[in-house]
View 1 (tube, rainbow, N blue to C red):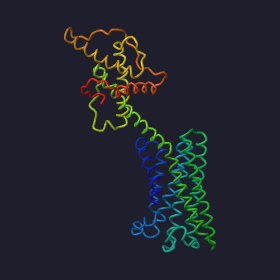
View 2 (view 1 turned 135 degrees about the vertical axis):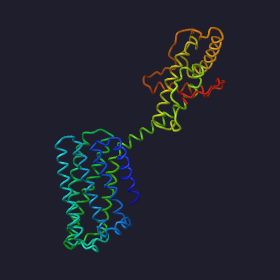
View 3 (view 1 turned 90 degrees about the horizontal axis):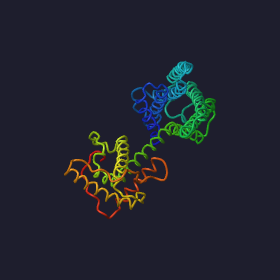
Length: 388
């Protein structure tokens, strides 16, 4: 049971984070409150998790608290769809639904307080449903849960039909979870009626329904977090890819930054965690790509007439051209103090056969890897802080 709680808790934490970034979003606030209430009800349903409540408020308090939290959960779930409509009718219906759930909560509390405390001991499976107030307690709460979950599931399916993956996938999973919860509530209502009449229900059947309820809640939690989780996974993969490409481009960048250190951009000194932050990694990667391209354009006049070479040959020419540029700069500095003019016009180097930034970066990576694996000595690089 504790393991299954991790998914709703993770979903709640994620929604709280989203709400902190958009506190005025009524629909997001509603779904967040729904998850908060659902998670708060879990400890009250766990064996041994209600001892503190029992000690303070008595045996019946945890059962009433659990059902009140579940009623609030489905109410806020309804509000999510009503506020998502973003119209006056939706907000008005949300207020009426609030009145309705308050009446149900009041009835639940009154019925719960009228049940003898000793009857409340145990779970739904072992409770004595021949006690009319207890049967009414479970029936009133269960019927409202059935109503709210069925309506929310229907609305979710409508949105799922109009959506595209990954949002539609998450919506279909959430709809399946709510449908399963509604079905479990309906079956439990039948069980209550049978047991109130003095009949009996096989315990394995009641355990199966309880398992259906838990599985449905888990499916619902996965569904509402699936699009966001998938987006986070994609963002992490992009972060890892940019970090890897940044390292792979280092030999090329290091060689070219020796020839043209002024081309390297000089940002503010990075913080201690800049190398690991998402924005820091992406910024450093894009800067390195731009700096490599700019330097290649500037050094291209020194590579000779034939510039359409493979990566290995071009890497050798780049090393030779770098030495030439450095030598010319030293000569120019010792004479007139200016750089010597380029021997021929600039040209594009290491251009990909396909269009697109990914193909362009891959071409730079191939050239950089050729420099890395070459046996020829690479000029030693002074420390440059901009692209580190």
